[in-house]
Amino acid sequence: MLQVNSLHSHYGLSHVLQGIDFSLEAGEVFGVFGRNGVGKTTLLKNIAGWVKPTSGSIIAAGTDITGKEPDAVNRAGIALVPEDRRIFPGLSVRENMELGLLGRRHDGGQAALDAVFDRFPRLKEREKQAGTTLSGGEQQMLAIARIMVAEPQIVLVDEPSEGLAPMIVAEVFAAIRQMRDEGKSVVLVEQNIHEALSVCDRFIVIERGQVVMTGHAENGTDQAKLLEIVSV
Ligand SMILES: Nc1ncnc2c1ncn2[C@@H]1O[C@H](COP(=O)(O)OP(=O)(O)OP(=O)(O)O)[C@@H](O)[C@H]1O
Ligand SMILES: [Mg+2]
Image (cartoon, rainbow, N blue to C red; front, side, top):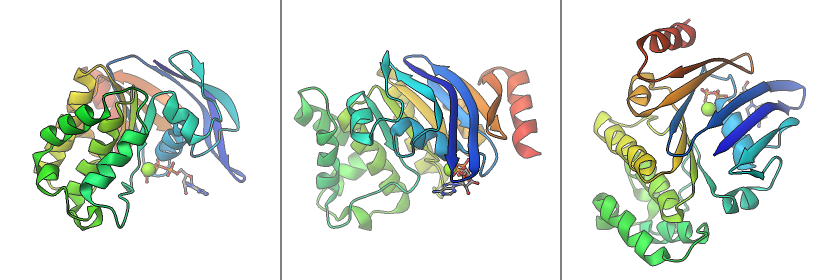
């Protein structure tokens, strides 16, 4: 579904990604872990076309999207839910959701929008409210809901639980599970490792710009190894 091969990425002279390799299956939630500043966000931005790789390749369902503009990556069925959520100021909750319609590749937008509103009654209740006046947790839900309206094949989610209360985190992770159950693939960057392991199938750990381990979320040995690396 998604293949990242020998991916390198720089900011000026800073060589952040130094040969990242992994591949993602359809219907899989794939965790990307690593300490602060190792390049997790940079990896998602490279896939989404927000940052250009220096070398290597990114293949999505057989299409080479390496170095493509964000629009073209969207059209290839990939969407990023960025860490800062990007709720559009001056637009209501419904209008923010309608922006998700622009990213759709198929008909049936109105039905998809209604289905997502049914899935998030809290957003439906607030559909006329300005998006930026939602609580932090509600804004995270809106950011994910807006992507669900577009129905991408691959969703990249950066630190969705950041700053959220446990009940809201549970709702956000339930939405991620739902996307997986609908056959989408999800790449999840998350500091909250215990929560993330409950939703992930497999994961990688990045250190010094490279993948230092690949593990199965349900495997106790892999879990222990992961915790050892990220907590040192
Ligand atoms: N636009 C930029 N210009 C220059 N350096 C940057 C830029 N964005 C990120 N960096 C640097 O690249 C490195 C990787 O950053 P990145 O945000 O990808 O890390 P991260 O793993 O997501 O960290 P965190 O867990 O704190 O979110 C960091 O050293 C960061 O300072
Ligand atoms: Mg980050």
